[in-house]
Amino acid sequence: SLIRRSGRTIGVLVPNINNPFFSHFLRGIESVAMDNGYIPLIFGSNNNQKLESYYLFESIRRAADGMIIASAISDVSYIDNILNQNGIPYLLTDQAPVADGDQVDVNNYHGGELLANYLIQKGHQRVTVVTDQHPTLNLKQRLTGFLDVFRSHGLSIADEQIVETELTKLGGYHATKQALVHNPTAIFALNDEIAIGLYRGIHEAGLRIPDDISIVGYDDIDLTEYVTPTLTTIHQPSFEMGESAAKLILKRIQDRDRPFQSVSLPIELVERESVKNIN
Ligand code: RIB
Image 1: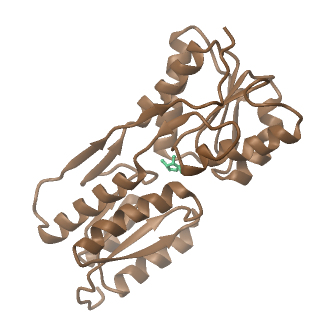
Image 2: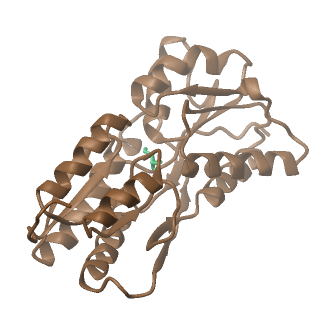
Image 3: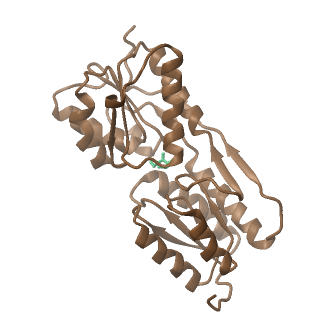
């Protein structure tokens, strides 16, 4: 293992620094780290495995005391080996797989359920979903919650009504045509960035939200209040998720042997203007 001294740093790996969800998450980490005399070393992995390994090794080389990983690392045992070998505790959250360790959890399954119940209550039965092409566990749970509620109402969403793209504004924009093929009355975008990309595509297709088509997103990034119409979505406490992750990793750095701790944070549906009641 590399020779290292404490640099009072926490390495943080997120998939996409462009997305305000992650910038808020990072600000949460930063505020706790700074209060405790630590500095975050921030990396955007772009879902690129090579980059991920590179950043991991750089964090070790630059003497990170712990790591928070919110990106979709492919292989937990690989990470575990490298970090363990170098005595670096780590916490996996959000897009990372679930493994033994401290947890910061938001109930993604329930978020999906809330949105499905809301759309059904507003009369929507023909719904298209736009999700990531390589959905991580948290996104899968979100979608499963959503589909389960539709199924429990005897409504089905066929595979071809699930469109796969990138989890970005551009991804949403590019997915528009395919999302409109089955003439949905509503679209569930698996995150707000996709929803905002769809807004542009739908505008170009000459349709109006919510008169011609309704949309819901997920995350509650600040942009949702600045688009027209404002976007109905699930609020994820991204800042608090960062704060909790940082608190847990700092406790772990100070005491390697303490029992694993799990923090569960609440989500809620934020109703705005993007869904029409078609009952
Ligand atoms: O917008 C980014 C999305 O990816 C969020 O929903 C978050 O939970 C992450 O997985």
